[in-house]
Length: 69
Image (cartoon, rainbow, N blue to C red):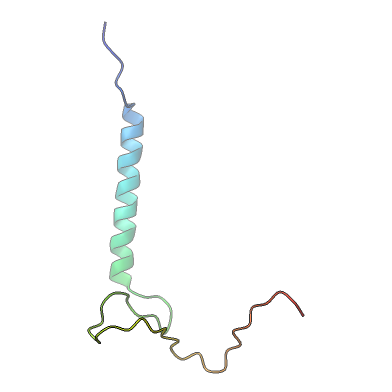
């Protein structure tokens, strides 16, 4: 008598398709680059460090996000 496979073939196919979709979306997103004005790629920039926050050109934007009045 033949033993059933440990992992169903449909599950293997689904996981392979899922990995393919994520890979393709990553490649397309990397090729497209940032999609909003003022966004910069993350990673090392060669400026020597610092973990400062780059606010870009936020001007007089109100940054208070409270829930009160």
